[in-house]
Length: 232
Image (cartoon, rainbow, N blue to C red; front, side, top):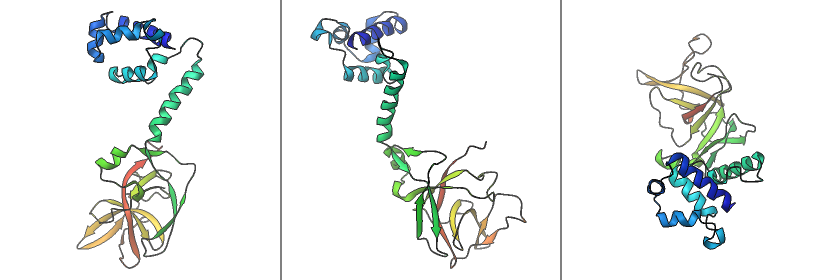
């Protein structure tokens, strides 16, 4: 593998840097003496271009993962694909998942019972910094499926939305998951003459009429912040 990486590096320098080692070293933030070590078949018995050195160089040059290991002698395309998947698994391992659930509600209560759903439309995973940047807490987020056409064309049956249960403060024109008489519904909140109403985006007014939000019988579960759809 060390010899294969050296050949890949030599080809990279020839094809992308005109064979100019100094230009390559400037791009890689590497001394020419260090490059000579990587290319040497005798330095450290030819074992100088190891796994760590290859990954660091790939990162500095913006190359694909495992670039220097690509299709090594005697290595099949299937083996290479397996290596790429393994590298992807490492990235996924550091991410945080948002579970998709189905809900069982009690009228007028924000307390709920949830059951994990599988299979799902998509795998909601984000790195920790994604949550930090948006000031979100992963344990306060859940994904649920859209079950009716009341919010069409924005949300269609079968779409999936992510709900932030930590955000229950009502804002005009924002979309929320609401416990409406014991049923989980997705509605747009509208303020009209000091009263809150549950409204639908669907223009079929006969089927989806707006109704006043009843604080005694209804409860906001959380605000809808993301959606996924296969229907474009």
